[in-house]
Image (cartoon, rainbow, N blue to C red; front, side):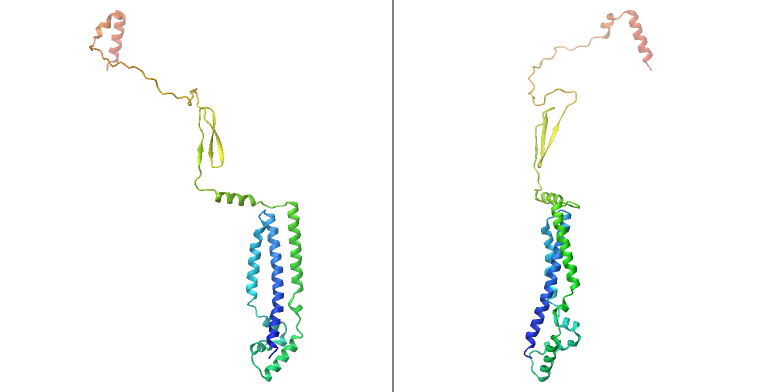
Length: 249
């Protein structure tokens, strides 16, 4: 079976090109749809590369595991088991295998690559690609948006970039004059107005020294209350006496 290795190589190469074409077309549609969505919410279109690249590489990795010989047998039943048998015995020679090789070659002449290219799927993907590209161009020119996430992302980046320890600078508070207190990058105007006071706190002086006398009286005495009786008349004294008598319990 001298011709089977070249035939199998051609089968894998032809079907892999078709598979790669569909993967690439689907990746373009996914990228343009993601770009359209990101335009609506005002996010950088570079983020659309993430899902598109993830889909492309995962699809290529999965398709490498496909059995393309089995795909041909499923589509053309007359080659069922013949093509796989010829593949399994490519390194052997016999009259039976030569006869099998002739049947496989004759059957492959009836196989066309167009049988593995669904036209309806191609048209759907192309129309989706055209619609998404047109919508993206229209949004970029008209400025239409649903919600703007760019400000939210910018604020989040600034909050992460700021240091944990924020320095606080205080201004001088001088009475009724307006002063400023800086917190981070913002300045806050502060004004202190004392009620009922005209003192100028900015002009504070030390208390002046005062001379205090350290002398004490030489004699201390107690005078009796009789000495002050002459200051009151007799009638006043009677009134005072009656007052205190009434106050007694």
